[in-house]
Image 1 (tube, rainbow, N blue to C red):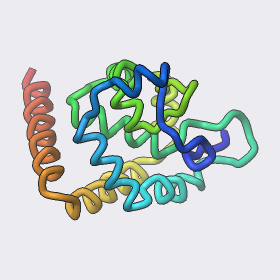
Image 2 (image 1 turned 180 degrees about the horizontal axis):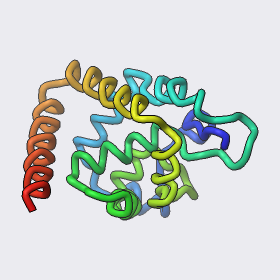
Image 3 (image 1 turned 90 degrees about the vertical axis):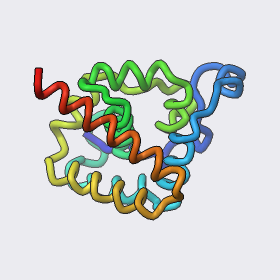
Image 4 (image 1 turned 120 degrees about the horizontal axis):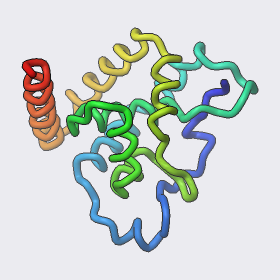
Amino acid sequence: MAMGRLSDRGKVAWSGSPLAVALAPRHYFYDRCNEVLAEAEFDEAVEMLCQPYYKDGVGRPSIPPGRYFRMLFVGQFEGLESEREIAWRCADSLSLHRFLKLTQGETAPDHSTLSVTRSRLPLEIHRSFERQLHRHFVTSDRKLRKHLHVAVAQFEVTTACITRV
């Protein structure tokens, strides 16, 4: 399967009606995360990291690795436990459409696409992604770090409750 790239797509991130996207409330946390990721050239770094696991010119292009890892990020910080929940949440929210850098006519990837991508990439790639995120967000502004700390704390409480049941 060929690797999809965010750089190959249009630069304007929107989905559905331009008016609906313009009127949709913005989410500070995800907007700021996108700014931090852009400053760190996150998408390009992740594409280079994942390139060995894809073959150019073979089959339909996959979802861009940056979008895949952004969806995992959403799942982690919103306490979503399954790929179906992540896919549904990303498809339902216009602010997440912006965060995922979806362009006009694109839809959020469904759960089966997430499963295929997860099985294609080894665990060390996922761990490297987590280290990169941590490194970029630790150096980001204080307000974003506060939101990240709250989100991580909520995530830890949620997973602790699930493991007890």
